[in-house]
Length: 545
Length: 63
Image 1 (cartoon, rainbow over the protein chains, first blue to last red):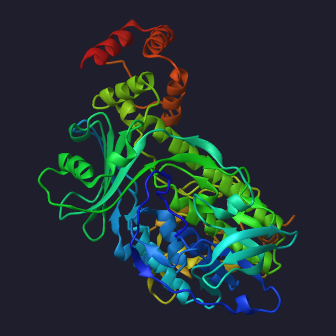
Image 2 (image 1 turned 30 degrees about the vertical axis):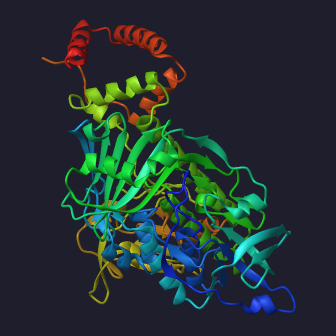
Image 3 (image 1 turned 180 degrees about the vertical axis):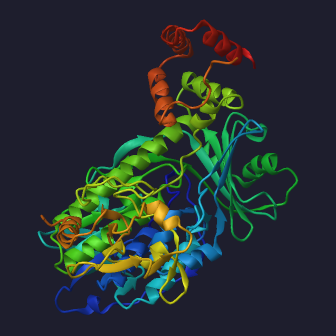
């Protein structure tokens, strides 16, 4: 698998056993007399590449998805999947499956020494279909996405197809792909590079990937044990079981627990991976509890991104485009959000509904997100792993004051957890009236419980998924709308059973909300008017209007 | 009666913390202590309230 949430600069080689084995199959493209041109090739069948392929496939775009491996490897790697990621996965057809399989959590606890100093609740509000977070081994998520790929005829998934050459042209790229049968050439109108932190596509194009590498080394271990610790994120600064360093613990399904131990910059990578050494560290933490080690890795992490995500007909997504430290679960989650941002835009361009300049807004919106993630991740890392004794003294002063004063507790930063970015984007139509409630222009619409016309209970986001939708509160007849905009009437199509919808959207009679295909709010009005809706939709498609 | 405000006053506490960290980046412990002392004087004068100052000292000293 090419993409990995936890994939920093790994100092160790893990020989991963296969969790699921797939087979190489020869494609007809390898025997074609002339080089075949495909609309979209995605390289990298990790969470991000799989999500991009499914989203495009669901939109009827033919996709070739290639991966250099032929298996899903063991090792949990990314484990924390955020609410927004789950909402996207729900639209991709696997959300409910993931939530059923995963461990749902929303509480975080931070300890200084052995004392609890701070606790947070990531979703204090009711009425959302998806929880704040689930923990689930990355291989389960990849398996669920692979199973979904198999249901979509538009996706051609080719294992053991390794990208080895890219020749850029004005309206396509020519690829060289190595297989067990030897190399073949393939053309793609668009190439989506989802091939992870060590992206081959990035190297082939000679792009620099610059930023900050942090010196501290961390041990991550997935262990199996029967323990009844509560289902919450636990983070320690300087606990007695691991003095002078930080520790993090997360619950996963199957009695697997993620332990993350800071080792400092001087740690010896070879020594620290010896099982007896790891076991001794874990015993200091867990006491007499019996456990077995499933997977270990030692890593340093990077905060960096490409200067541009779009290079002609090659578009970078996920870790291939940007990397952050794992504190905050901003790696794979942001990658899946890249995929969703790109998919509807690329589908519109390929179908001729929008110009190629719409792809530039992918870059603008997702660079904004990447910079946000990098900033949060860097701040968390500055707090968790101070650069010098002088910086450590400040950090320790915050921790020492925390039990006594509120402001210090709020400065404790053990990772600010991933939330969706509010796009500051030319695709949004500025508000002409003031709106209260939680909904923000440029952000995904907040979810709320609704009842459908047929009386079935549902949730708002589920009912506005996938295409441009005008959500409105009835106030007389709705004007004639331009083609390609679905409508949903609050009170008829979606009935606000709890009042949460009206409150979160500040929905008054006549109010209307234009949602992009990725459920982000593009425009809203107190009173709807066909010309305004048409102009806002044109604007959200990157067309002058 | 306490006058010292201990509730968070910054809109973005992470930005406030990082500003303080960046001020001492690259400094030795001694140089950072000198910086801190000047900051204490500047901020104490800015507050300009001897009762607040005494309360803050008591809180900071109390373990």
